[in-house]
Image (cartoon, rainbow over all chains, first blue to last red):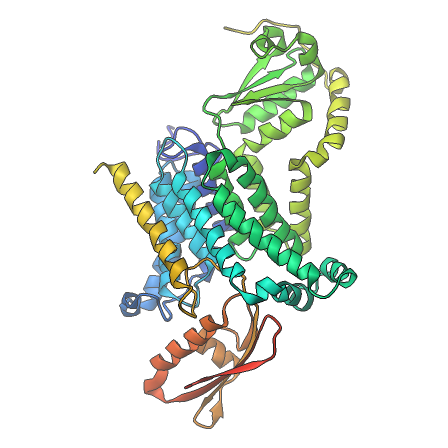
Length: 389
Length: 116
């Protein structure tokens, strides 16, 4: 039976009406909304920001918003109508925010605006509306803090970390220094980071710095508190995909076509690469010539080449996984379904360790061992074949 | 204008409204929509008297959709704004007296009253 063309595989990002990275952003938000059962937080109108909501029948209005949010989220994940369902889900949250001061929150407003601005973005070119949105968030947050006497003096952080969070690391650091010095340092680092990120988002050449800077900043906040602050952590991290330079052409992956283990690994990755984004070429096909790589180099490790980069071994595998939507979706699902703050902290810490160069020594060691023993790991070595033209 | 131009114009309008809200927040107490998340820690306790009768915490929660006591990660003025608006709405069913004892960022406790 033919699958209707409107139905989509949630792990397929290409060929849709928005750039792949914006589709991924929307789908990560949709997944978060569903897994955190966010629709249950939507209230009946209560002291709305616009009086019009007071004249609507409360329960039917609440039901309509909840239904729209669930339908919008499911539509984002399982259909090709990304723009339509981004507007539906985004509008549902925005209307819920505007209709209730009880529901109002920065994190919800941010998710709503991300979805709506995604829907308004161009199919081609960078999603500048989302870049400007993040710039506004960081600028507003930084400006508010820099003008607040409790942030200038460190009082906010000291009270928060000591009395509210009872964070042992901060309490220890603070005890080693004169009063409020550590707190002042944390406050001004936060202010500096937010205002710097606001500026960097506006310049495309600094976007890799925005991805790393904002990603680490938000991860640090979660590691410190253990709290995703409702939708805040997920939405801030998902928004960074709008800054990623997604490959226009497929990523070339050069692998050892004479190795059974490599073939099994390739087939596994191909099964979850639905776009597909990888162009697999055996080293025996002279695929390395265009990158100036010799057969000897290619036999040492797998190589992957994307726009402006060429990586091998562990670094190549890491970069490839980042381009598979399943990777980000699994992380989001694991954090959203975590039973408590410690599990969330552990997951975020492990993901950071994996993504940061700090994991290179161990990663290279493990990769090197596997690469050296790859012919013994799985039966089924093949003879070297030329690449099909 | 083409479809794309309309979309960009709408997107820019949404961003411009937020820029306006950030500027507005410099001149008002209730800083809604100005992207100031988690900038204050407000510990509070709400007491409500209607006539000579005090409301139970569950009644306070129902009245303001906020716990009768707790910590808010945002401006104390959001809480005062909610109480003021709710009380104006409920005024026709009888006048109430509200006292909020609150402390911002660990500073000394203060009181806010409605009606002021």
